Length: 207
Ligand SMILES: N[C@@H](CCC(=O)N[C@@H](CS)C(=O)NCC(=O)O)C(=O)O
Image (cartoon, rainbow, N blue to C red):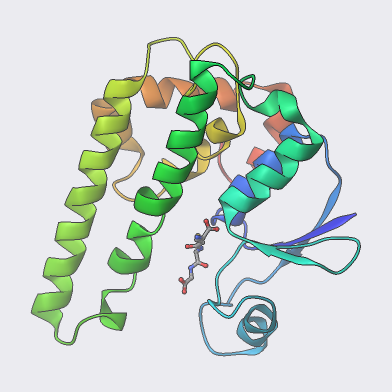
């Protein structure tokens, strides 16, 4: 069985949703407090030098970090969670998975922790505002790629859809998504309505 290190409602919830969609059993290790000095931080640092969650441990004690890598691992075991090879939907899946993980997700490392990158309240505030604005424009771009009533990659729900119920809870906040990205928010609502996700979404306070 997999072991997943995370914190309820944090980025590990995306991995939990993916594991659940793939029908994989996993044991969740709650490392709440890992972002502050202490035993949880040392536990995560030993597994991931970036001190980030999620961290996945396999039955062979192999360590996997990076949510997109987890998605690729699960796709090997459950290919139906991405569009078929050779289709344009597949290309879209590949593009958006990398786009999300190269642009959208890491933006939080800058705006959640501006003190890591700049000194002084003024510059830190400016960094947060600029990065948050950049991220909102990325979401807006994504919204323009979506078709009403479809999943992120079209007719089939894929592992990409696992990101949205979690990320709409982060900045700029759910009210912004309802007002500005209604097609993306519709996907969130349809994910919330999936009976198989009821437990994992409830445990992560995402309903
Ligand atoms: N590239 C990583 C990003 C993971 C990430 O940013 N995790 C956040 C929590 S949602 C984290 O651990 N933040 C703590 C920190 O950066 O100090 C992934 O895709 O899994």
